[in-house]
Amino acid sequence: MRKTLNSLATSSTDAPRLDRALQRAKSSFLFDLQSNQSRANTFGEYEVIFGDARVVFTDLERLLSVTPEDIRHAASQFVSPTTQTIVRVTPVALPLAGAKGGAR
Image (cartoon, rainbow, N blue to C red; front, side):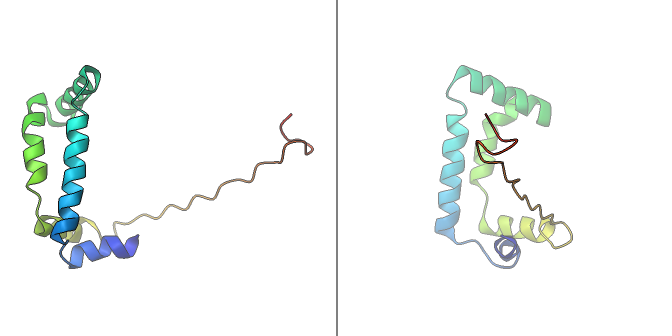
């Protein structure tokens, strides 16, 4: 994952890959506005985060205007070895059913 993230900072994202990502983002954004409940949640989030729920009406246009150069620039600015955090999660083994101290 680190190699992929670092490559965003040094090389340009190819156009077909970016188009697919933008289409998925657009679909998700529009899907979130379909029901009254999700629309209310989205407007509330925008009001809290941006101070103005009306930003939701321009946000999709702003998102769809992202270019490969924008991604490279943001990655070079925010993705670096000094800003990366690695979290390793090791699951705890659960006792087998019927074993002493296990589930009954």
